[in-house]
Amino acid sequence: MQANTILLDYNQAVHIGYTILKNNLEVGERTRTISLDRVAYLLKEKDFLQYLANNSIKRLSLLQRWMEKEKYR
Image (cartoon, rainbow, N blue to C red; front, side):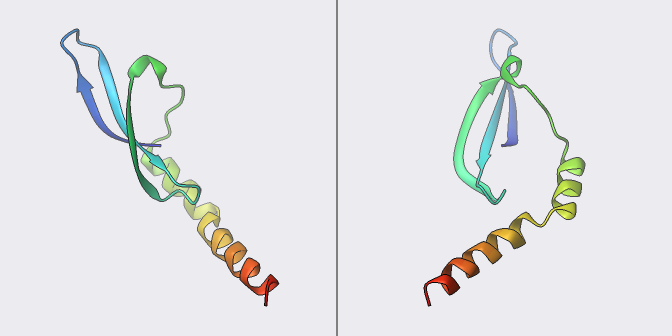
């Protein structure tokens, strides 16, 4: 998930609007809003980008799709 908005309601409760990421970690179109007390873990953008740089998730996904095509030829 990727946080997009932070909102305060009339009771001063914090709500976070977020976008759900796809399996390959690209930003999806589905969004939701939850209260701050339901957030279990926070990963900062810098740490997330470092994780992506160290792991070839997108490349593995492309390789897997290519292998599936080759299997049926």
